[in-house]
Image (cartoon, rainbow, N blue to C red):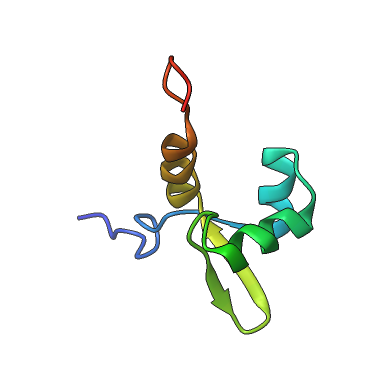
Length: 70
């Protein structure tokens, strides 16, 4: 019987810097979106802010424009 890794089912987390680099936007824009309540859901761990990759993907899907535009 193999022992399962207890964290293998957790979603990967990325930092504000990693998210900004991925989206090719300034770090401040991530904070602005967060303050406005329009960015992806994040989690604060002390002074550190992290985002689940799955939440970012879901948020990106919501941002997609329809073929006709918005």
